[in-house]
Length: 277
Image (cartoon, rainbow, N blue to C red; front, side, top):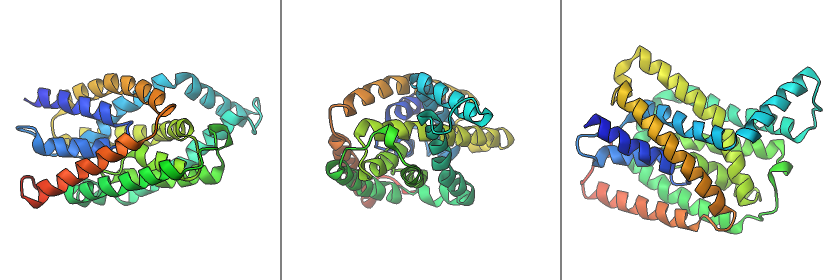
């Protein structure tokens, strides 16, 4: 049964990680609804995100490898420090600092209290509304090349909210990007770049913790690795679809979905059909 649950959770992780609807919320809810399952936990979630982030690296490989090469080149003096790719490298580093600090300071909070389904349901609705407003009212004039260090840091601060199941990493960062006036593809692409060091860092740290404390991984290593592989394959397809979607359409369907899911979850909690923790 654990292997089947792992496949389902892997599909969920891959399908929802890049959409602004919160993969951690869907894994948390699925843990309550699937027969024989339970909350997969922060460790399982972080490890499976390695799979989806690997999909990001492969899909944007040309961009990411070029940015890394030029950033190191600027340190050696072989690439101009004002090169756009060098700047993007610094933007990702600066934008990653807030979530690293928050992740270290609030470990216990992330693992326990913030996983309450009452919180998940509430933030699904609240941040769904915020995303809708930002997407509708954003000026849509800034491109990825015009990203400033101030904006990069602000989007990085928004990424910290992704530590709360229900907010969504892409949802929080894209919302901030749209609020600052960036085009949808630009906001999404920077959000993808920004997530790479944060997700890999968190995932490999949690994997190390799981080796030292095997009970923390929940389903066990075999099913977790399977879920990570499934998440990678599904995630790769979803990235391609999402980038095509946002180049022509708004985030409105995701906003509606978030609000509806949050409302259904609140009803289920109020009726006692599922437990918050």
